[in-house]
Length: 121
Image 1 (cartoon, helix red, strand yellow):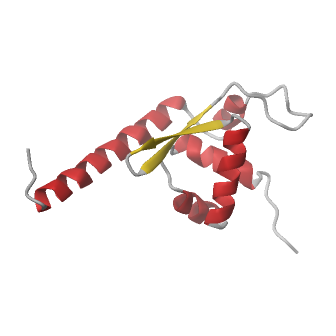
Image 2: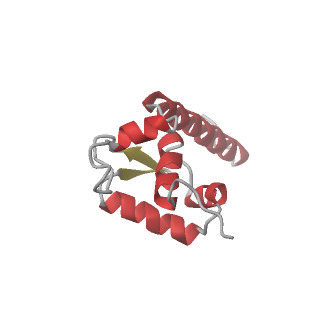
């Protein structure tokens, strides 16, 4: 008997990047249990449909969610994606905190790299 789940891979990817906007495709793939290539395709689908946008920050992408768009299925178009994500525990403040965490980590890594090369300020 095959396993089934309530959420599609698209919903899982969306919920993960909503909560952790700077996860890499590899990290998302590991968390969900699918291949990185599938995650990249899903991210492209979500971006093409306007549900997410991505911005390059250093070597990482930072994702943002468009919470006002309706869910896609005809029986659920009255529900905004933001409401759906909130039902899964998403809060806009949470994604801002993750963003700050990753920026601080990236700054620390850069500082260590600069120190190793003797380029401290």
